[in-house]
Image (cartoon, rainbow, N blue to C red):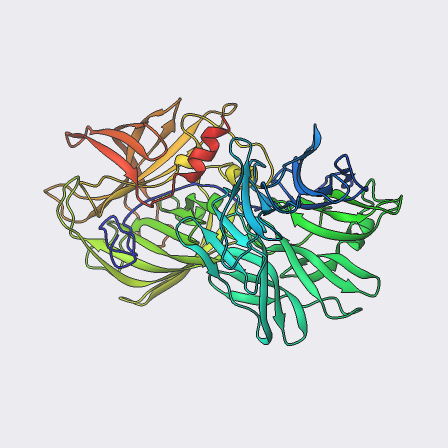
Length: 595
C-alpha cells in the first residue's frame, strides 16, 4: 500500500480486479408478519434492595448486561443469559464495590464497563469468561467504558469532559462536542464496525443526544418537546441507523427510538401500539441499549410492583430505519439487460470502503469495438451510497509480472435499496459516456449473509461466505480474482470466480475470465469460461464458451492455492492467492468459529 490507495498494483487507492461477499449488518430490522413482540422482565441479583437496570443486549437477544444491587451498599455488573438468568461479574480489588456493565459484544462474550479501584476512583474494564475483568487504563484519574464494537476491538468512553473512542492501535481519541454550550460530551455506545458513536453533548439548548460518524462528525438528535430540553443517546444498531436513548417529558425521562426517517419516537408508545406481550402494568421505560440486529431493546422501567427492574423488549414490525451498505452487499451483481457482463463488489465495514470490479466490453465507438474490457472503482461509502473513483488498468500480460498502469478515468456511484437490489451510475470523463445500470444478485439467494447477520443463524463450512472478496497473486500485481460463494447444504454449494487479467504474449489487451461450479469442503474444482462478442452497456448478445478448468483450495481465511488449465490455448499454471484488502478475513473467521 502506497500513498493511501490499495492496489493490485500496490498504488494506494487502486485495487485492480477483485470480488467479495461478506458480512452484513442489519439489512432487515424485523421480519414482516411476526407475532406480537415480547417484553421480558429480568429480575435482579440476590442481596440488597430490589433494583436492576439493563444497559446492553447481544445481537440475538440471548445475553443482556447491566447493573443490580447485590448487597446493602454494593452495585454489581451482571450478565444475563436467557436460560440461566443473572450472574454477577464482581469488581476490581480495592475501592468501593461498585461495578457497572455498559456494553456487550454481538455474541455476548465480551462485556465492557467500569469498576471501582483505589479510593473513589474508577477504571474502565473489559470482561471475558476466560480472563475475567481486565482494566483498560484512564486519561485523567478515572475512566469508563460505555460501549464496545461487535468484535470487541473498539471501545468508547462516557466519563470525563470529552467523549473518546479507543482501539488498541490508536488508544483513546477525543470526539469533541456539540456547538453552542460548555465543552462537555460523553460517549455511550458504538456501532458494530466502530464507525458510529452515540452519546450526549452540550449544545446551545443544553444536554442533547448526538450521533457521531467517522465521515460526518457529531450531529445533535434534538429532544422531546413536552418537557425540559434534555436527551441522551445510549444505544445504536450495528449499522448505526437506529439509535435509542432517553429524553425528558412532562412525566420524566422516557426511552426513545430515533431513525433518520422518523426522528425521535417514544418507546412505550411503539410497544403499546403493537400490543406487546408482557408490558401491562409497566411505566417510565428507559433505554439501556439496542441489539446489533435492531430487534431488541434493553433498559429499565417501573414494574407493576412499583420498583425499578431491568427489561428486554422485542421491537415490533414497522420500525423504519435508513438502509445502509454493509459487508453483506459484497459479491457478484449484474444487469439482466446486459447478461454476460457484471460487477463484483468487496465491502470493508471497518473502514467503510468499497471496491468494485466491472467486467464488460469496449464501446461501439472505440478503436477496437466489442472487445473484452474491465474497470475497477473504489472509495468510501456512507449510508446506502458509495461514491467511487473509476480506474482503468492497462499494459499487462497474462499471468506475467509485467508492470501495469492504472489511472482514474471517471466516477461511479453505487446505491442499494435492500440486500438484493441496487444501481450503479457511471460517468467516464475520458469519452463522456454516462449511464445508470440496475443491479441484482448474480447468484439467487446469496444475500443470505446479509440476513444472517441481522438475526438469523449463520452457516459455517470449510468454504464459507466470508472467503468471498478480493484476492491477488503477489507475483502478478495489477491482476486478480474476485470470489462469490454460496454455501447451501440443502440446495448445493456454489462458487463464482471472476479473473481479471490480460491477453497472452500474442494479445496485449485486457482479458477477463469467469469460473463457476460446485464446491465441497475447502476445494472448488470448476470450469473456466470466456465471454466474447458483447458491447459496452448494451444488450447485444454475448458468446460464453468453456475454455478450461480451475482448482481452488483454501488453506485458511487469508490464503488459497489456485491451479488452472486453459485447454484451448495450452496454458496451465499454479499460483498462491492472498487477500487483497488487509482485515478482509474477519467474517470468514467469525463464520468458521460458528461451525
